[in-house]
Image 1 (spheres, rainbow, N blue to C red):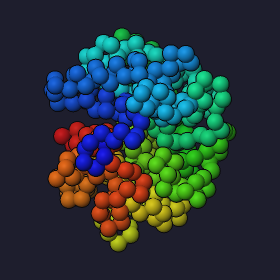
Image 2: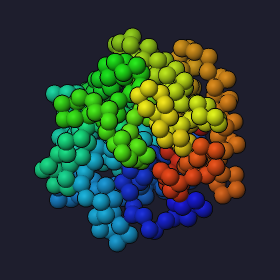
Image 3: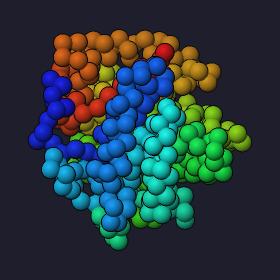
Image 4: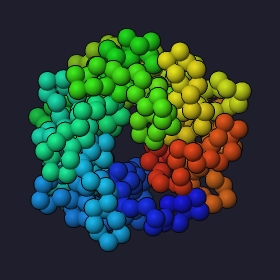
Length: 360
């Protein structure tokens, strides 16, 4: 949607947005008792079953245009993670039509995206799943961890073995990304890697404001991984002690590096490896993930974060929430005025509703 909440038909229909919004509606139905959202969940599942599904090669197209033609070639792990998340959340909300989609998505994830040697997710294939790109990244792995945990919860009653396997995969990903790579880099998380999972700290230095692969450390991802570490801890019965330690370290470093560091309140988008802000724009999703992590840290008894939660919700209410036109501004400039340097319009409410639900 654009800034006024109107569908922007200059943009194609995007798989990750379809997945996120199906998940959001399923959360509203399940957590808030919003039965009026059930039809939206069904609509999202129908799109996953047919509109985005590649009947020839398997998997799902990244985007389709308004005539139903493929708009973005290739198959990406990032977008596929939201197929898993959407179908898992829909199944948990009682939509049985989600089960075959979830099974299919997990099969595609295992067959094409799971790298058993490195215990990580690879990123981008061509449309036919014949050529794999050399890039390896943390973003797709982060959202796959979230998706695997949701799928494990949804499948637990009927398929405990698969649920346990997915949780162990999530733990393995966290071990490399957080316990090894982030710890070794002073809790400023490397985001970009080569095929052997060696970090490339200079990746996208020339284009630092990339939507999905920005240069440097991404403040919001530090918070997001902190929350995920605690979710993995809760999901894995025999969990290692480093999960809680890493969660608190990531939270602390991200707050110190990102909040109120450039002369105005708010979280900067990215920093250099010495902690210098690179992209000063404030993203709504970064604030939301900070809130979600603060709630998780508080609930686990690791630290009292009430003051941070109050301050960050007050900031959201003052600057990000669009009280005139609805939803949230997705981006603010360094003076906290609406901006569109990185993100345009109001694509989805995935981060915002998860922060709100965490705070209930």
